[in-house]
Length: 461
Image 1 (cartoon, rainbow, N blue to C red):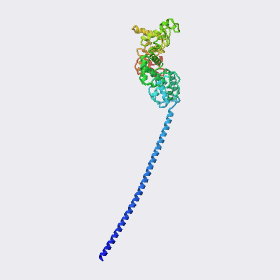
Image 2 (tube, rainbow, N blue to C red):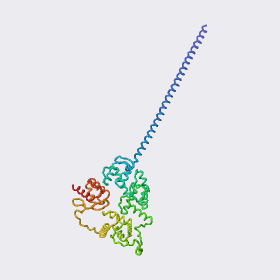
Image 3 (cartoon, rainbow, N blue to C red):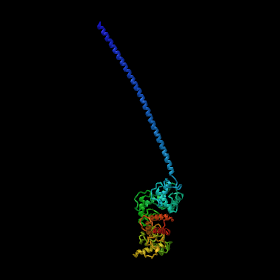
Image 4 (cartoon, rainbow, N blue to C red):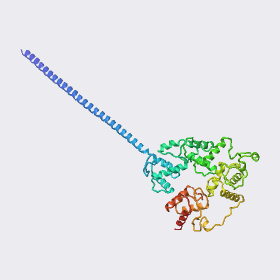
């Protein structure tokens, strides 16, 4: 009986334990399910939150792009406005310090062409441009304020037209550059910075003579300018690097001579001497002409031209053949002689030129200095106290002791910074203009009686 009760009790306890275990298992399962659901819910929440954040980020990026596009569009519009404002026609406003634009660029080009501005053509009106404008105003008797107003701009344009020998149509620097692209060779003086078809031909001619080894660009740069100077030195022309009418004429003739086998109008007589004795032509009356009885100029022929060429050759100024025909080489040699001796350099050998030429040749061939003519005290180059003689007029291209004394005087007064060579060049002229401006004299760069007297007065102080 006891054994039966024990068995029943054991069975009951086993059943109770299983039920408890089952309850515990069910509880654990429920907790697991709950946790899983909570985890899934939390994951969904996190995913939703993350998606929202990503959406916001993308929206922000889109907004940033829009802002950038807007800023870029705004910048482009601003740039377009500035570009439009920069394209201002020359002379349409008063240009002054800090002005910018195409009209300023054109102003700088014109001032460069007149040897008044040596800076870069930038279109920015700075101190150097202002100084150049002042120099132009002083030289032309205008009010010196450094501003390029209507009057200054118009006169500057007029001086450019006079220099080029042609009408200039203005607008902006860009439009004038296009107009300048096709320029007749020899119609203007070509200098550093210029462009055009005439520059192209200049470079070709210099190349033909072996003086220029650069590219044919149509733009006059340092290589082209150096080649022009070399040609000028070799042919007794002022070596300023500017290809003016005289330089171009002689250059053209040299190239023609080389390409035609070395003959030119000056190296080949127009007529055979035997034919001249018998033929009756329009040139016949000119064949025998007394030296000094007429003014000799380009195109003339005769025995007087022959003697003129011999005299110029004796002084080392003429290197061509003695032909009796006055061509470009002869005319250039005459100009050189005139410049060196304070005469008007027109290339025409008139009475004064021939008389002085004869004296120079006679002095050289006799091995003696020219006979000195006694001078009055007032006519001497400079007196004992260093003052200048006032009975002369000194100007650009002259070469003399008077010019040298002038340079010494201007140097003493602080106006001239160069070496006193006796040659009246651009630097001397600029120094004279500066002195005239200071003393409120006519600013023409010519040292006449009034200017020389004013210098003497300053030297005595």
